[in-house]
Image 1 (cartoon, rainbow, N blue to C red):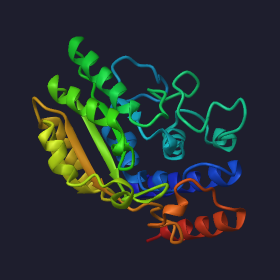
Image 2 (cartoon, rainbow, N blue to C red):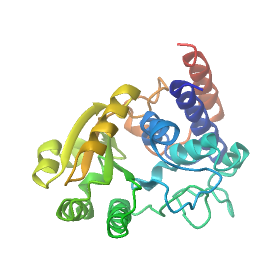
Image 3 (cartoon, one colour):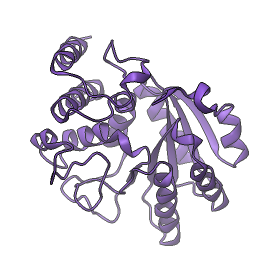
Length: 271
């Protein structure tokens, strides 16, 4: 399938699993779909039949509450059957509300406490350097998550050790659970801050596959420093009543709302 078709299927999976679970985080999952699709279906060197392959590229979802997009992507890529998505957030399911590397094929790091995922990605990238491995490490952080102090400690370490095998996406949708990021705790000028910490900065439309791929290629060619891709996105992307609405940060759609969302996505696949 073309990348946009894959993205559409992942969005459908997000809506279905959240409606069944009656809990979860749709807004920031939907905003990250194109980035995840590009990584897992075009850019990353991975093998779904061998999730622990030592030479694989790694991905860390630092904003760990965004598991719907991660699980939807992993299932679509073949790491586990899509029927498993029906068990999302159920007791004894391998698909819990936050990623767990012990139980879910394809999950490279257990995350959930905001900010810790980026620190873990640093460790993976540093290990790759020390072991002379060719694999690359990708991570995704949130804009609300960027208010956490541990993010800035991790950013310092990445630059200090010149982790040019690390590429981080900032899913910059401008909203968090309590409202607009700029009102809760402004993180601007975010590009200047990252740059001052020693990072290579790229700004893109986070819903453009072309821009995502070009940014990743630029990151691969950047030597001596890690790359931060600031991806401007729309919270709730693809669902008209969810787009740019902070209230959909952590609320599952009702059966009626899910039906409307799936109908919109069915129409959208033909656009």
